[in-house]
Length: 113
Image (cartoon, rainbow, N blue to C red; front, side):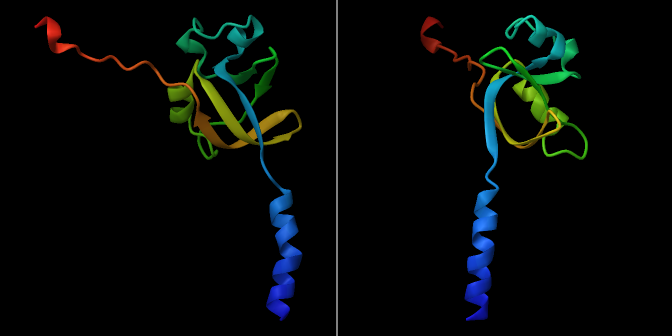
């Protein structure tokens, strides 16, 4: 009986901390300032921000020791993503990155051979 009561007390706390999610494009900060996505140079990949659809930018933590690795940021650069996490002091602490846009796959058509 005590175990059931303890679980009932802990359950609301576990479900009350749902993560927020933001959708946008991962681009370099200089590109976010000018609202550039597709033509954002790769040399800004070390300054990633999330450019939201409303034009605002949201800084987020990534890299070594973080939930989002530098490789994940590289793969998602200039693509639409969903970052889930929480904002602390104006910086997003993401725990999950979902890629919403994929690069177009090239298919080889054998009919012209």
